[in-house]
Length: 288
Image (cartoon, rainbow, N blue to C red):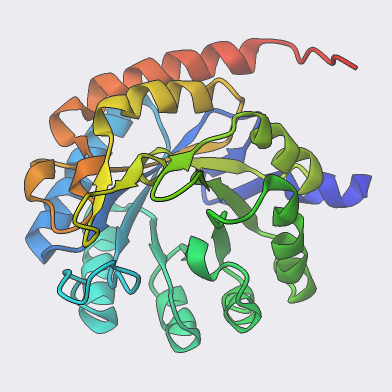
């Protein structure tokens, strides 16, 4: 167990180190590829700000939002066009990219163009999809399902290990509380790190802010509380923050109510970096 923990508590992506003991990595970007120009421009802004603040960045975007609430909701450009856009971002901006995969067939396709593959929260227990993503040998970001307790995450991790992939990140994104609400249990962060071999823990502040609007067709959000929640999570000594931003959140084609306004990205990250630096400089205090 000790050897396994030592092998898994750090995941390297080029010069980027995901570790609960290292400076936090930003897994940041946009919810969905609304257009080629929008994606490249936004990625450039992210890169400029993260370079200025010395924050490692993995750019995130979805080529297909396959789990939208309504049949009328925008899904994205699809896998072929999406991979072309990712290629441009990687070549022009020299940024690693992460995207989510919703079916077995697209796992291998995405792995040819993306540096990190994400398994969506709703699908993280689907064994066939776990196997397909694990066998790409890419780093995998496992979104914690909203319906699972922290202790149940070990079963999903063990599936990935069984299929030969231990380059894993775990992403907390809130837990269902009653109807149409999410709550983030900060005590669960330590539980996940302890039971899941010390794997790097990422916190998805954007999707933890979701709530359902009255009409039930689209997800609402609580973006005004984004900084409060992110600060609380960073204080728990984690490996990274997952964040989506948009220049005009109210006009975003997906999850705008939870997105951080892009013009606030720099001061937002500056405050989090200060907290992260303080927490990781402190000695661990064991209380039995």
